Image (cartoon, rainbow, N blue to C red; front, side, top):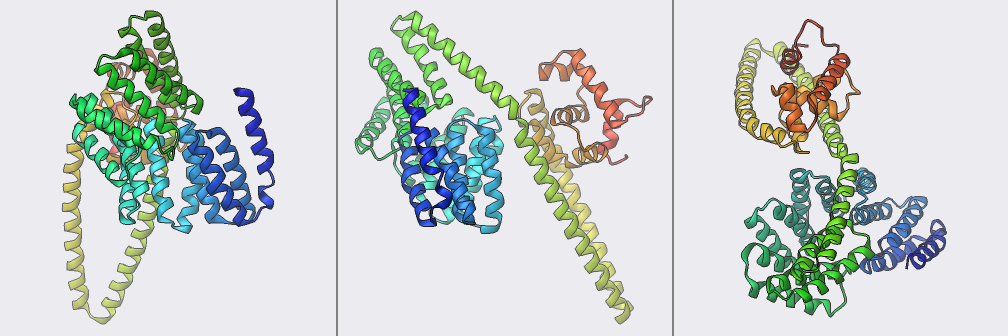
Length: 475
C-alpha cells in the first residue's frame, strides 16, 4: 500500500515537474481536473505535490490570480492533513497576493482556512471571527457551496462549546445552503447526541446514504457518515453493527491521513468494543486514542504562538495606520486654523470652540471605552485562570498599550514572556501564576527574575508596581 502510494507521488512529481513549461490553459486544466479529483478521492499527499508544482508553473508565467488560487487550495489540503504551520504559510502568501487582486471568493476561503487552523490550535473565539468574515462575504455573493462549508466549520466549534442552539442554527443553514453527505451525517449526530431523537437521526443518515450512492462527494465524507452510523447503532444497542461501521470509518480516515478523525473514531471504538465485552480491543483503541491525542497536543504547542504573533503584528500595523491618519488630521486641522486665523479672528475663535467640544466628546468616548474595558476584566481573569490559549489574545485586545510599551523597551520579548507580563499586570502573584499555568513556584520565580533583567527593572522597585506604571504610561 505504502509502496504504491510512494510510486504514485513520484509519478505525479516527475510528470508535473515540467509544469513551468505548460501554458496557462494547461495549468488551469491540471488544477481543475487532476488536483480536485485527487482531493475528492482522498489522495491528499498526491494532490499537494501536484499543487506545489502548479504553483511554480503559475509563478513562472507571472499569473498572480492562478498562483493565488493554488496557494489557497494548498492551504486547505494542509489543514486537512493537520499540517497547520505549512497551511498558515500558504495562507499568508495568499492573503498578501489577494490584498492586490481583491478576489472576494478567495478572500472568503482565506478567512475560512485561517479560522480552521486557529481552531486546530485551540483558538476557538479567534476562529469564529474568521468564520464570520468568510460567511459574510459568501452571503453577499450568494455562494452556496462555500456557505455549506463555512457553516460546517462553524458548527464544530459550537458543538465543542456545547452551544446547542447555535450548533443547530449552523447545521441547518449549512444543510439549506447545500445538502451533502457530510452535513446530513452531522445533523444525525446532533439529534443523537443532544436531542436523543432516533427517528430524526435515522432520517438524516438515510438521506446521507442516498447521496452516498451518487459517489459525487469527497471520500472523507463517507468516513463521517460511517462514524455516525456507528453512533446510531450504539444508541439502538446493535453493537456489532456499530463496530463494523466504526472500523470502516477508521480505515478511510487512516488512508486519508486525517489524525483528528482517526482519534475521534478510536474514542468511539473504545466504548463500542467494551459494550461487546471485547476488553482487549477496547484497551488497544484507548492506547491509540491517547497516543494520537498526545501527539496532536505536542504539535499544537510547538506552533501555538503563531496566531498570537499574527494578532500582535496586525495590531502594530493598525496602530501605525492610526498614527499616520492622526498626523494627517492634525496637519490638516493646523493648516485649516492657520487659514482661518488670517481670514478672521472671529472665525478662528469659533473653530477653537468647536475643537474644544470635539475634545470633550472624545474624553466622554474614552470614559465609555474605559467602562467597557472594566466589563471585560472579569472575562480576561477567567481566561487566565483557565490557562486558555486565547488569554493573551484577549488581553492584547483590551490592554494594547501594555504590550506596546513592553515591546518598546525590549522588542525581542517572546510570547511566553509577554503572557507572563499580562498575568503580573493583572495582579496575579507568583503562587497563583504557578497554579494556573501548571508550573512550579520556583519556575515562575526564575521566569519573573529573567523578565526583570530583560526589562531593566530597578532593584529597589517591586515588579508589580513597575508593571502597573508601564500600563499607565509612566515609563
